[in-house]
Length: 397
Image (cartoon, rainbow, N blue to C red; front, side):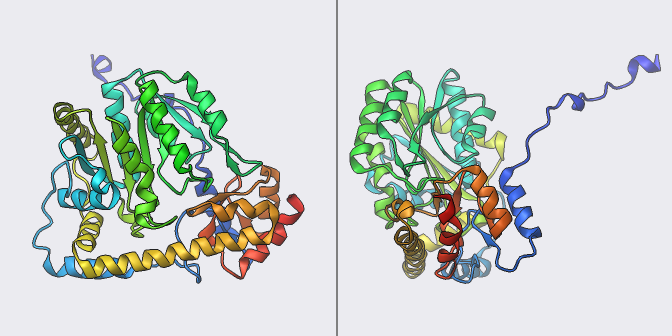
């Protein structure tokens, strides 16, 4: 009888082994490299001229204010800090937001926003396919896939020619069906740095309208390419042109709040009635995913956006970060003809037109570390190291 009542072991041995995270492996290799002149162009964080990732002045000041005035650390609701979401929406969507048709919630980082949006799509339209341009951030497809959605990649960027292949993109999206989702980088494309032109954004909006596609914008680098309004212009255009649109947002980069995981999700619906359903389901899903989002980072952003002096200082420091990135882009573009397109691109990342074998040789022979597809973090460079990188690259062009 005791044998019949014995608990059945959990079948953990049925789990399938998972590939190691390539970026984490790159970090470990760089850390173990004893060469003093080694160069880390892999990790996607902003770095200053001293290769530090400092806490922004406005963030420090906001934290001090919060520490001296915060009366409680009681739970937030599933929607998080709604004043944070409202203030941030003004920065991101501006007058493009229709409050009667748009629901917004705080999320743990941009990744949390993407996953919440994916879960909502899986609940609303489980047969939808998410179309993702290649190349893209490596975590995009897994996020949607783990939510149970199908994903398909479409050609977006010609790596050899370092430019967008818009004709191929439109040709491949001809296979998309009504109700499918089109994932879009709002600005500062990761990993290519190549953004659509105004005309191409207009064509994308027209395509979504004609074929009944839902645009899902991932905006993670606002203000690090061009000024805040310029980097949000494409997203605003999408929200103004289409009845249904989704936006996942991250404050990790433009506020330097990487480890605090600060994001938001906004969903625009066709009418107020659908918006009420969307909001109810967003909150139910958020409750099951993380119950309530962490407060500290969102409180920092809200404090900065509500204080004129802090906001001005944040925008000033952000402009300095942007100028550093764009200055390094210009230096790379001027150093070699094959790197010229980098000067017209935007954001922290660029893709070098080199083969994986060359990436490995740069690491082994020169201590230059980058992702296997040739993606580099522009902010990992300095005026001193740009010539070093270009000299090492020259034999591979």
